[in-house]
Length: 444
Image (cartoon, rainbow, N blue to C red; front, side, top):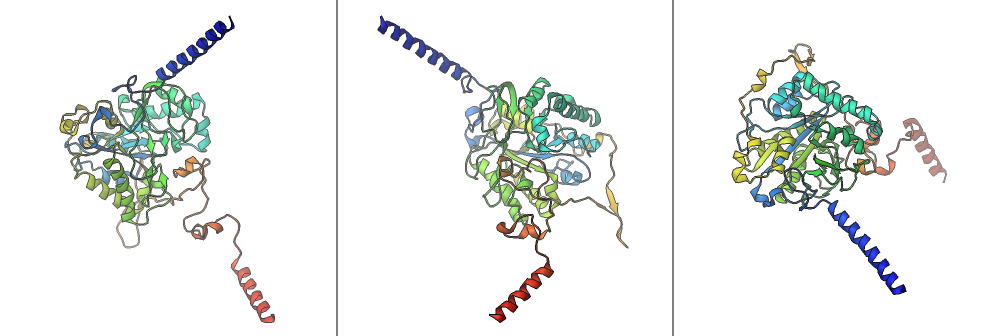
């Protein structure tokens, strides 16, 4: 009798374990239960099962924050309105701008969108501190996300169906609060979640994926989503390696080993491009702020980088949405010119048909005995440091205050063991101590 009871108990326990394992398998993202075009698991495999040399290498260049006279010239130089820089299918190259409201000239947004570039949502206020975005309530975050999307639709006259993406300020997610808002309001993708790998320029890169089976990657910046959002895409913020191949950076302009000349700036971009191009050809994600281009050799390096890419017949500089169109419906290079989502009906300078008046006027100065010249303000940039996951990727620490010192402060050039905020000994006291030491030596 005891043996019978024991046998029944063992069978009961095994049955529960098998059922639990079956449930776990059903709730796990696998190629059998997650298939394109609506679902894709996180991973490095190429959509459609193609070989790397059979697919286009997509390059996605994104800029964050306001658009105004500070960066209008940069965007016009890098992505000319006449369409003279074109992809192999003849359509102009494109970028994605994540636009915040404050200080934005919406006429410029309208014209940039008319060129064929993508405009996406980046909040109204872009407020500090960073912690606010991690802890925001559903009501407050909805105000930031939905109001700015409406601003872009109303003030820049962008069709609502073209406003598909969101990136949170400071790459700070708000967990399921943020994803619930995006999902319920028919956003297509999020470009907030940082992925801190690979930390070299030789390994394959993560492709975009959906949240059909929740977020299963390393949660690099808390809080991450825990729920599933079927059909909602994640464009991972994959780190780039600095030009020394030493430290990772989520934004090009936050690399701690900042380039010191045009060649180093170019190598930063080129080495990371080759990482993708020579491995699994996942999209190259180049995330930056236009402030990086205030340094002339950085602007020249990005310009040269783009010019080199447009000479390659298997490279496409495109927007986030168009890249996702390919991921959902992958086609080989041999058919790419017939790929409908990438076709265009473009005429040079077609933005001239987007009638509007610039909100702000460029700042002008008149040096003595010289004609008026247009100038833009170039604020000092202090590269932020730190030690947690956020700062390992070059993202400013929570609070956003940095070290509070300008780039010319001598303490920024001191050895690491002397870099602190304690007051330095005044020069006069140094001189007095030196004289006293000499006197003591003479007495001895």
